[in-house]
Image (cartoon, rainbow, N blue to C red; front, side, top):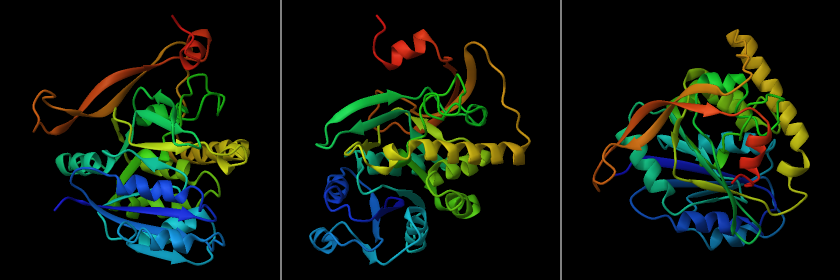
Length: 300
């Protein structure tokens, strides 16, 4: 039996996008052991019909008022018994290979505490991929220097993409150690606060395969409408962690060099090759013409 993965979806009045989220789980391929919980905050748009038509995927459904998305996720985790945890919002999706791959990674690398993709995808309202952006690697130092903060988010010239929430999975033991308090510490940026707590323990393993996709479906969706508020909460969480750890960001004027940890196949040409951990340096460009050109696909 494959290692059990418990996923939670928090939702409220998202009957337009929730079916695609659930169907992305129904389309999973390979061997995996999934426990799936949907936590609804009291929708009035017919969610029960959606759940009833997907009872082969949804193992548990709760419909009751809650204190927001992060409280719903925490309550969902309390109803789960999987060794690996994660959540997928009701407008996002997973790729068909994700759960099989995540299962094998955690089984074959028992020291891995959390993993996240280095290839971040976004889809539009129709579900078509509209971009795939690369993160060069993950390291503790890079995180606390402010690298994973969105382009220009914290004012750090080396800032690149945020860690993608729907493409991040972690062991229950790590969640139980530092997770619940961190997730509840911010109203919008609970995910970033959680990564901050996890990162203080150890960095995630980066994997090149895309695992999940963020859906851009409305100019009014919270992640776009309240981006400035989200960024401010990220700054608060990062600065609080820096103070607690007595971490002083490393000044860098040119190319920044860090050491990342990656999950890679030992023998790619061998179908039964196992996954293992490798460490290597990666480089982060400062903001400037070259970085902007790469981001805008205008470099030749």
